Image (cartoon, rainbow, N blue to C red; front, side, top):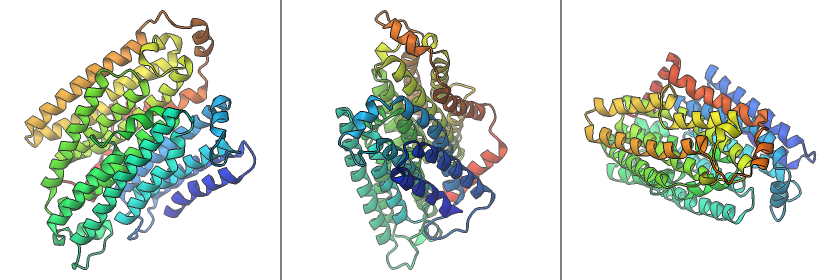
Length: 490
């Protein structure tokens, strides 16, 4: 079954590009998404036997499930989105691109390949295969960012390819250092063996490897100061792609860092790796706070919010204990909330024909359901109760206080406070503000139409993050704690 999780989206992606029927790729997308989440559910009922290369361990299953749930929501949204964009955007995409006779098929094929590579990244049990999977996510998602073929899309795509490739090259160097750390020890290089025999690894080379892993995979995760690709890519990609980048792809890189942090903890070097994660967590949160204060682009604002939340994940993991469990809960809640917000931002861009925050006003009046989702998304990512991110952020704060890290807790609260003020200014002005320069006729004509395909995925994702704030099922919390223990984070 575990191989089917990888093969289903891969085969569907190939078929989407090869089948001549125009409508076939859309149905392939939905069918593959539904089949994928069914197979993932099957892994929870009956996990496949583990191997040294690929296995559905508990942390992998947890992040794979998040990816699959998000992709199903995105697939539903994508079908309607492509129908709406079948005019100018598709025509522009068709001119001068690979598979030029079937631009929509190319887009859907790359989406399915993206799902396959992210699935591989969550299930990989060998540093070499993990590196291949994360690099593959870059290659298959780059055409998705370039979908609109604007000069800003081209710049964002090249920046994404260049910066992430440099980062992943450093992660490859980290693999080499890991091999040197195990030299002469007769230790298998799969993650389970490395963790079981971590104390036999050379500590100097192991520390050096971890620094490279944090910088390398941290680039893909969006940790500052290696985050430069993220605001451009999230801003210029179609909203459905931005939702997957922020809600699923960043988690894959986080899981990679989490696994190597577990190896250092098993080697007795947990304090070293924890300090590095706390440092990068604070840098990321501070960077996001600075850029959010004067942000005028709606999607870039969401991108910097993602950088903030990746910093929170790193910080919680570095603190350890209950804060590490809070970090995994935060990863789930953030994925749901941020995907909902990116989809909602896509609806707003269609209504107002702009990403400029200064030109988007009165959203609740123009599009009541979209406006409600926008406000709910703000409350969620700002950490308001009763949404799931409030609970996870509170859990991380509790972990910091219980471990006696008062300075860390103070800096954490201060940064969250600055970001809260910045987001409040942006979201409330967009939701309730008035702009006399509106083209009322155009907004009224387009604003009254809120098709179900553009609303239902956001409503479902929003309901999920709200439910996690009201009640965390004991089995889910136990699963999160067991995943932290399985990785070896203390």
